[in-house]
Image 1 (cartoon, helix red, strand yellow):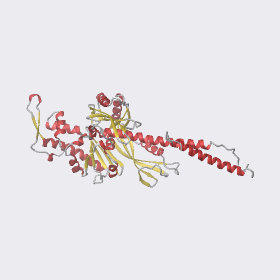
Image 2 (cartoon, one colour; image 1 turned 60 degrees about the vertical axis):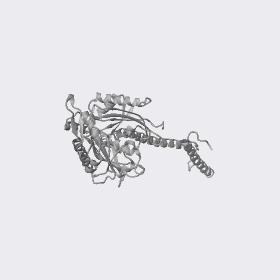
Image 3 (cartoon, one colour; image 1 turned 30 degrees about the vertical axis):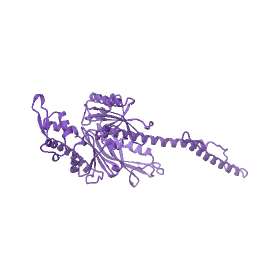
Image 4 (cartoon, helix red, strand yellow; image 1 turned 180 degrees about the vertical axis):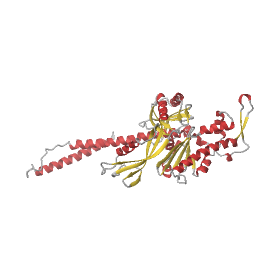
Length: 463
């Protein structure tokens, strides 16, 4: 395992569970899971923290379970997922006119362009969670994925801005803080899930990630390598359980158990003569439930969720088989029997289950390969993405500053008496030329030597 890499922790505060997973990348770039803990979630409804005290207790229990799996862990900072029907997204456009237009575009200019978008007008009570650049333009050149290194007068981009309710964001931050942790970043859950279940081919082909959680169904649509759309649909597995409870007149625990054990998203695929026997309450006679009726209730709610997915795909013009990668279903609700067939029937797109083991190293707990942990694994990957990008920038700046220092040092190493051409006599003119040649040669030699020293690995033997 690569000990130099940091340990990054993802914290998924969901409607049905709270999961904490600690991971570190190995030398092959795969995630080694160092700790895992989960707890039942009681203070969260539809992806939003409503009861802070209960949420704190659940977070602390998940952390205790994580420490039990690995007593050597120390957790202080976490990447936290955010969802809920308060999440909204909008498209904006930003441009800047460059002062030094002869020079190549630098990262600092892109950062300024992104920072400008945080001043976009949004309704009172909302807060910008993330600003995601889509395609860039430089002067008249369109659809540039990365403009760094280009040269031009005007650089701009289309942006996808994600916003959320200030109180909902405050409740999440307060719950994490009172649990003794620091929120390193808030990440939209469908983007975290997408990072865990998607590969480069999916991004290129175009896919819709549908994360069916307990309280919400999260959607992220990628096309031509960029994020086109995000949405949070306010229905999830909890709604199906409540529908079963109401429709069949059973307890919530019984409804959940029937859904997991006998549930199907297609009533036509179930046997009409199959029944489930439920024990009667307080000495009452047992109740017989038709498996077909159970499937009909599940199908009605899942069809509604998939209708929302189709609606959002139409909104961005990507419903007519333009997504070659189809739909990737993930999250706990994706494991419902016959859900793939229902999804393909309603949306007209190919569908498959997305498992988060794409980025996991071998030998991890089998439990973590389940789609319900996609968000948590994706949060760790998001943390590593931030860490690696920061390192690249630091290394670039280090090389730039060090090289600049070397040049200054080398240039000042051999100082000659300055003689102007006017003062030069025929006798000393040749001497001036020789001295200048010597100074330039000394500077280049020194520069080359210092560069070699700078990049020389420890332990290298001099030849």
